Length: 639
Image (cartoon, rainbow, N blue to C red; front, side, top):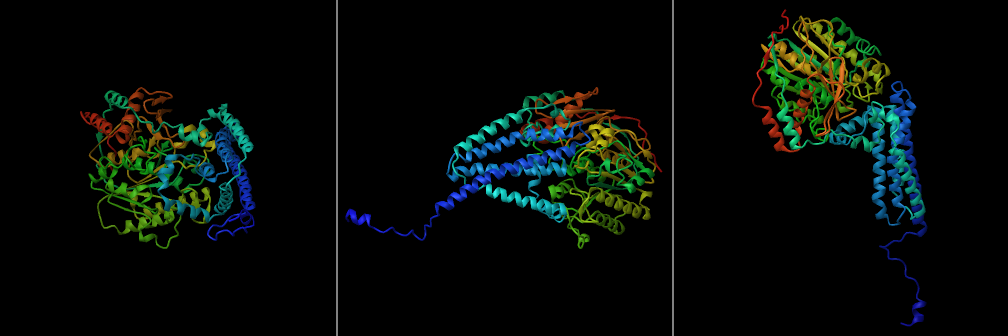
């Protein structure tokens, strides 16, 4: 073939299986990638402004300068902005998309996590913790139901619109980008400046709820709750710990029927009687004034599972090492011995559980089976067919009470019973069944009306002649603290919930002084039903003419997950969980070391990393058994 022939050869058409893209099209996509980089940074800045606004709303009335709190939250988040800018910078150093893609994905993940954190802070006044993602992430059906209920509301539709806009931004942000070394260098310099700004710790970071101001990474990393104990430290604590001897007193040997209602998110600030702030529970307040109520009552945990653990096991839901990282909410609290069913079975009781929500949520059904409840039912019960379902596939509270009354009217067993009723309607986002709109005040008025109806129906049936109704919240609502709450209760406002006892049996009446707690329910039942009952210093009893509060009360915090509140007398202290560096903070009672060591031993026995260490701790705790102190305390009054 001659040279001339090669030069004059006509160009061949492209192979049909190998299409080419015009250079102008590729350049347009690259330019769109630059726009995507700008929009994802703008989206992050908008989210920062939104988080600052949320912190302003939360701290308004609580902090001297709520605007300063919002600004501080944004300043602390400058570290995350620096990280985003660094990711963006790295995408502009090369044209190869496969080298850009990891940084593009990391940018999108960072923005999504930040948006979820802002949402959680806005709706639950909590931070997005990694262990919460693990715990609740497996509950996909509940998340879908929750989202579906929320999207039916006006606020949900607005949130969906915002989410769609954000999705478009994220799609743009994943497009390939051109090589722009100067722009990359500019982003790196900006990232360095924002990183320096984010490291500054202004005086506002001394705010009591500083964890709300921290950036998302710091809030997750600055926790010692899962720091393991060394074997040497555990052995030292186990050898030195001297457990208090249980105090045993004669019981009343009575066998009334018991109903305990755990009202989702019921808090002091909902009640005029308990809080003096809002009058959303007039029926509950009227029942309390007629019977018995506890104005200084403490919820031992901050979640529904924590409330159930406290009521049913008589133990505070102090997290074992790894509990918050576990998808099993009831891990370590699933041994039947000494729990409520075990205690009451010995007195001839049957123990039942009723709710309208799905029992599979967080493994409730497995937990109740392991504790040997006699019966349980939830959303699957045929009675709820035809009722509108909302979050957790639950029918409204009215349906729960009507179902229980049906069960009560048709039960054939003449023996005594204990029934625990768990409501759902007042769970965030506080959808009022009467309007199908988010309305915290309205949904608690609705829930209170149903409690009043239920009380009236029980009274018609003569239940209170030989029956006891107890009403409490499972935990304080996950909503911002009110200034009036803090002024009245201080930091303990986060731990408080109403507690009412209604019966015609002879127990103390009116307002009962002293700090009582959810874990007092089990020893109080034992005190009333058994011939003899024993309790420890951290347990009180109240189903008697002369109630006796515990020497100290424990509360596992939800805002600062590595802190355990200890209430004694009129004082409050904290145990800061941090492995071998665990420490007591605040005023100290005479037995503070014993209290702290007991909590450490309990944590180790339920969740040490080393299984051999768990066995070792359990063996050390078992023998020798301490002889109980039999106090001549007055037995509960008899009719």
